[in-house]
Image (cartoon, rainbow, N blue to C red; front, top):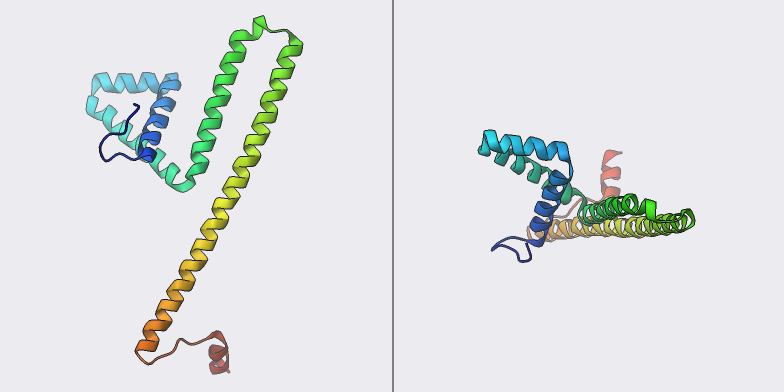
Length: 161
């Protein structure tokens, strides 16, 4: 899993790993996948492809947010498992400190993720605005080349009177 296959992007690899991890971590889904694979390998393959497509769509919609949210969820799961395993060995005061550290780290991660998401949305809005302006500019240039003009809003209002 260390190297990308020919033609595979890092995003595609991430989505495959995420989907496989989620499938394997959910014991019911894993059992269902194993049963489907034994009965009809093509059906299991189809289920896997549907799962990958679902993950691809989610990734396309949320991008970096999906990566951050998934990583945070995996970290929380690991922390919970580690805490359960060591609960009998840790005194209550130490456990309280650990919980407080985890809560603080979670808050910081949430805040940085929120800031990053806000910046991504602002950038998207700026890019859309720029694309719209470029489109208008191109239309104006094309019309000018034909000897025409683009009606402005003021001219449209006067024409409506």
